[in-house]
Image (cartoon, rainbow, N blue to C red; front, side, top):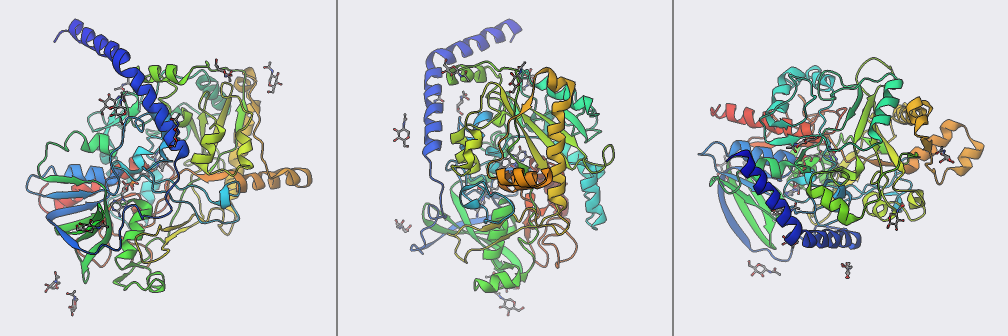
Length: 617
Ligand SMILES: Cc1cc2nc3c(=O)[nH]c(=O)nc-3n(C[C@H](O)[C@H](O)[C@H](O)COP(=O)(O)OP(=O)(O)OC[C@H]3O[C@@H](n4cnc5c(N)ncnc54)[C@H](O)[C@@H]3O)c2cc1C
Ligand SMILES: *[C@@H]1O[C@H](CO)[C@@H](O)[C@H](O)[C@H]1NC(C)=O
Ligand SMILES: *[C@@H]1O[C@H](CO)[C@@H](O)[C@H](O)[C@H]1NC(C)=O
Ligand SMILES: *[C@@H]1O[C@H](CO)[C@@H](O)[C@H](O)[C@H]1NC(C)=O
Ligand SMILES: *[C@@H]1O[C@H](CO)[C@@H](O)[C@H](O)[C@H]1NC(C)=O
Ligand SMILES: *[C@@H]1O[C@H](CO)[C@@H](O)[C@H](O)[C@H]1NC(C)=O
Ligand SMILES: *[C@@H]1O[C@H](CO)[C@@H](O)[C@H](O)[C@H]1NC(C)=O
Ligand SMILES: *[C@@H]1O[C@H](CO)[C@@H](O)[C@H](O)[C@H]1NC(C)=O
Ligand SMILES: *[C@@H]1O[C@H](CO)[C@@H](O)[C@H](O)[C@H]1NC(C)=O
Ligand SMILES: *[C@@H]1O[C@H](CO)[C@@H](O)[C@H](O)[C@H]1NC(C)=O
């Protein structure tokens, strides 16, 4: 086909799209926003389970059964089914994603829909104080593609020293040098200015910037440069500096495990069965050997047998729950719920997550164009901002506040320019679970001039947990983030330094040139402001307006000893046979980065380990 013909074809398609389908698309999007706004989160897994119905059906025998089709599960299903004589069953509790969840900007709405499990955090006194019942929403994907269908699409690998420290814990094979090839294997980078030698161009997962850049982008870069930061590819040579955000997007639509690893093969490989709306309630163990799983689908109960392995990829929250329901977990926790202890392991004990301060709102005289939803959707179809930016996220700085100029970052500043940079009040209820009083912080802002700098604590010391409400899979797991509980108070100190750094950007020439002013209103802290020190004031603000950036890790951590870890360096559960956990939960200690790319990497590496073990590689 010659170029002329391709252009003609493309032009026609766009034309056609605009004429006959665009109106319907705009209606669909409006409907979905309305649906999400009125959606009431689930309170339990009642939609999946009918405990009265006990008739048992048999779903057959497979070589591998993978539990959960999220980021990790999608990779495993693809890579293992490359071996023709392996029969693979992928069981996913959710259904399919749709046109709406493909649109990056609307991920806040998608977290408030049936594609989310519906979890909230355990109330504590040191964080989420501005939220309804002092509980933050704890979104987790319940959909093929997993949390990758809800997430902000940031593609970030953390710092090389994070992986090198796994080596120091005695976990073999995970030094940065050894894992870099697996990042490269999964990636298809489509940006031009990246550090050579660090990125892949042939993998299934698309990585790109969003375009065109907003007009606030360059002032932010210049302000950071005045503060001594360099422009970097944060997934390359340097991990401290300022950068455009790299996203898992493909022609400006969301890319995720399901799109990248399953869509291309799902109808082509007869040895792969993907079963949706299938909720696994138990791993069947014969003493210490995994034999299969029990699951519910359409209110019917099934068993399926695994000849070779069961691989649990249900994510950092659901995997610990499923292991505990199956008798693998801390003895005290299982005994408390009258579950027979099959394997006493510290499942759910080492939860870590990145706290994020959400109330840094600025105003500048840099004005974004005022467009209607319809106009923005038209731009989206052409691949143009702003709807191509998830929640407005565009640029980022990684800084080291403790030892400036040395070592990996401890704080990440995420800048979200107008017009989507500050959540509107109704979205703040849905996405953040902000209390009606505290959601006033999002009242009265101007969507065309105001922007946020979110502050993420990258190296938290506080340790939380995932435990059970009961032995019944109908009940949600209990998620206790336990932020800001570290004995030396380092987490609050670091967060405070991050806030000061963000405020100091206003003293740069670049920000003065656009008259950037801090307008964040720290509701609930006025008394402290009057009577306390500046630090006490910000400590109060941190406790009210710290949410999560949804990065739970280490709940089934990798390690050598069954005293303080759950899986070994091959992700095999200690003291069991034929059972692996492969998801963000196996990360031994929290890494200084967004976990999605690392989760893809882990699944790529373990897929190869499995192939090697069975002599297929
Ligand atoms: C709102 C939000 C924003 C985020 N932003 C980013 C970001 O920008 N960048 C980034 O790197 N990371 C981000 N993350 C985190 C990232 O998406 C996750 O770390 C990553 O998806 C983890 O992959 P996983 O395979 O461990 O789990 P998941 O992707 O969550 O997959 C688990 C899957 O298992 C299924 N499942 C669970 N239990 C069962 C069961 N019993 N039976 C059957 N199926 C089951 C679930 O439905 C789900 O599909 C974000 C997460 C959220 C929620
Ligand atoms: C609109 O939504 C319907 C129902 O979900 C779907 O079948 C249709 O393809 C969508 N149309 C467009 C143009 O997105
Ligand atoms: C919005 O959703 C509600 C409930 O789902 C429905 O009753 C209402 O008709 C919808 N409104 C519009 C404008 O579609
Ligand atoms: C229970 O299972 C049976 C057999 O599959 C099915 O016919 C019946 O509809 C189920 N009951 C309910 C309440 O779903
Ligand atoms: C909506 O989804 C359909 C089917 O997946 C796809 O063909 C179409 O291009 C999508 N539309 C938009 C605007 O993304
Ligand atoms: C990647 O982004 C650039 C602009 O930033 C755009 O020109 C290009 O088409 C994008 N590539 C894909 C495959 O989306
Ligand atoms: C359990 O394992 C034993 C051997 O360890 C075997 O004899 C027995 O048949 C197994 N039971 C089931 C139900 O698989
Ligand atoms: C587990 O092993 C013990 C002996 O080691 C045996 O007595 C018991 O029957 C086994 N359980 C099952 C379910 O096979
Ligand atoms: C954007 O335009 C709409 C309609 O023209 C108007 O109602 C709205 O107030 C404008 N928004 C801002 C922030 O100027
Ligand atoms: C700068 O911002 C302040 C506060 O928002 C405002 O009062 C002032 O008019 C602005 N100045 C210019 C030149 O935009």
